[in-house]
Length: 554
Image 1 (cartoon, rainbow, N blue to C red):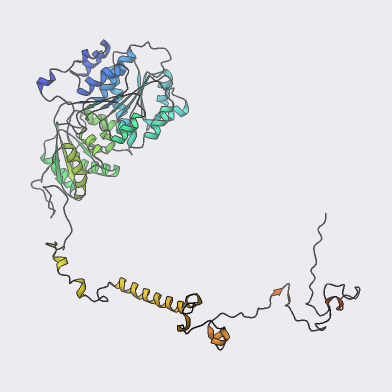
Image 2 (cartoon, helix red, strand yellow; image 1 turned 60 degrees about the horizontal axis):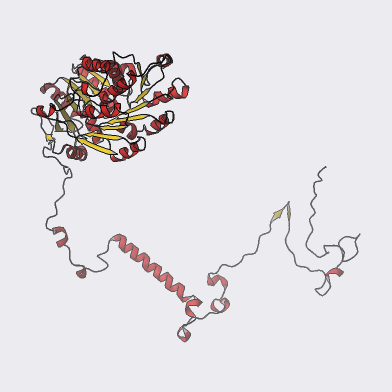
């Protein structure tokens, strides 16, 4: 694997050395779409990835959010497919997999805008909408499919899509696909694709373990990394220390006192996004929620209305932080701190796009300090902490210095080891009073056990057989040492109780008839039909019981 590291130009003199789109071997029809979309010059990720993708190499593209990764794979796709003859059945030649519906819609729209002069057809496939229109479009034939993993596998299982002719596979937001539970679905999709294909991975973040995983999927890839994986330099970061109870009032205060354009507010849960949007609407703000429990039509109306300027505020969960491109967003407010640094980078990347400036506000609570320090490590410096003027904090003192705060009270600090110097030396303490209650109980138990062991050794012949005459105890019969068995404490055998059997009582009885010197075979028989000595039971023997056996019919 070849790693390439490039720094993003920051001065006008450095920009003069950049390539133009017409120097990237793009066709005339694709260049017309580039000019119509308003692209003037390629971004660093586009400048490096487009030639590699056109040449047929596998590419792993890593760049900051908002640097144009979507066009970096859409333009070479259009360029390669536009040169090939289109057949009547239109088999799918390119597959783009995206983690969210919003991102799939955005990629599909970029394909339509950039390829408006080509004859290529694309379709977005995702759940939450009626499946019949998608089935009809697939039956008519498309060239590029932009799909979410779940709905794509539904079409594969039902046989409404054929992926045997796919030549190029694109995984956008590859870190999300592999790290957030999409890896099993991706592996299932790969089984339905040809082995010989071109694979393009694009992401804003790529941890080391995810990069090792992608290396098993990509074939001799070319890795292109633009700068460091961090928010773009056009975004300024600010922390507002607060508490959970003060967050809503602080947000309203920020919106009143700050000159903003379109604002994107992020929450951690879907429930909080719904209720916060309702509270802002009650405060006369033009706001729309965006969260996973909404239907796809409502989500699309919210995104389109926010993009067109119908809404000034969009309260969203992290589903909106993956690939949503709205250039008019001036502020991103983290109502809740995200769970990971990667999510923070994706959130902040929604502003400061296309070299425009943006601001990121975070309402932080003391529990967020650990993640804040990780973000500061990525940024290379401490984030500014501010305190709002004319805002009632209700006794809360904001921490403007940074770092964890000790909220424990009534604790006297230990200085110069005073707590240990007050103790008396061990030699001056009595062994019994210095023990803790648990230790004293353990000692008493051990003493009691030692006493039991000593008494057991006294009565053990094995331990006493070598003691000679000094041993006063010797092994004697039990009758000599004790007056009775009951006094010795030994368990004596009790007489057996008579058992009831078939309603009769019986027990072994001693013979009282003939004398003991008479042979057994000469005893009188109990059966008069048999001669003496031929019956198995004698007259004076134990009683006989006869049981009727059931005769089983054959």
